[in-house]
Image 1 (cartoon, rainbow, N blue to C red):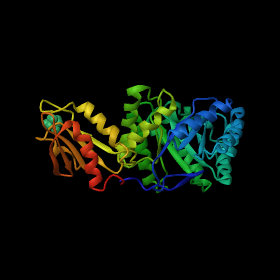
Image 2: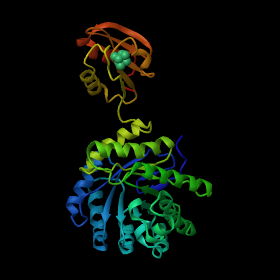
Image 3: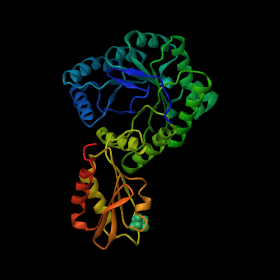
Image 4: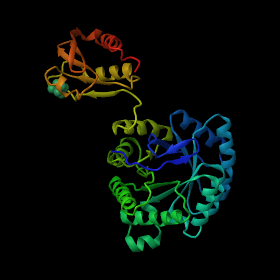
Length: 362
Ligand code: SF4
C-alpha cells in the first residue's frame, strides 16, 4: 500500500498527499543558454514530463532562471520548474525567487546557510528537496558513518531537523545512489526513521543516479525505483538516462504502469511462446498493441495456445488465444466467445467484440 505522505505544493502540481506519482526530468542545457533551455523544457513538457529541473551551478546561472521561467510561462507551459544547487548558497537564494522548488544537497550546501534558506523558502511558498547523493556526502558524515545508506540518512536528518526548527514542512527527500541496492536501502531506512521518530510523512523523490544509457539504464532504474514503488514509497520519480532526457518520460510511465500506479495504456499480457505456440506470437502481439494500446482501461492477453493460455491470462478483460493452426479463439474474461476464427480476421473480430461489450470507450 502506498505510504500516506503529506502534500507538498510545487507551483501548479502537488507531490504527495495521494496525488499521482509525478514524472520529472532534467534539462541538459546550461541556464545561460536561455533559448536552448526553454526549448528543452517545452519538449519535455510535450512528452508528458510533469516537472523539469534545471542545473544551477552559479549565481549567474540562477539569475537566468527569471527569464527562462517567464519564457516558459509565456509559451503556455504550466509545469513547475525546479533548480538544482550544488555548493553555492547564493545561487540557491536567487533560485528561490524564480522557480517553485529548489533542490539542495546536504553534502555540499553547508549547514550554516540552510536555516536562513528555509526561512526564505517558507516566505516565498517554495518547496525544498533535500537531495542526498551517495557519492557526495560531507567529510564529517563520511568520517562518522562511512559512505553508507546510514550516512545518507543521517545527512538528510540533519537538514530535516533544521526545517522542523523553522516549522517548515514543504520538503521532499531523495537519497540517490548509482547502485540500486544502496539507493533502495537508503530510502527504506529513511522511511523507517521518519516513522519511528514520529516525523511527518514527507514525500520521496526516487531515482538511480548515473544509471547509464540504453537497456542498462532502464533496468537499473526499474530495479531501484520499482522496488520502492512496490513498497509504497515514492511520490515523484526521475529515470536518469545518459540520453536525450525526453527518452526518460516513456520509461517513467511504463515503470509506473508496471507498479500499478498509473495507467497510460492498456495492460498487455502475453505468453513467451513455446512448442505449442500456434502463430507468430511476437508480431501478433505487436499488432495487438498497436491497435488497442489507447484502451487504457482494459487488459488484453495474447496467448499462444488454448491448452494453457486461458488459465494463464491473469484475469484479462479480453484474450486472443491460438486455437489451432491459423485459428484464433477470442475470450471475453474467461468465456470463449468467438471460436476458431481465421487469424486474418481476428484483429477486426477483437475490435468488434470490445465494441459489442461496450468497452471501447472506457
Ligand atoms: S500459453 Fe501455450 S503457447 Fe504460450 S507459453 Fe503457455 S503453453 Fe506455450
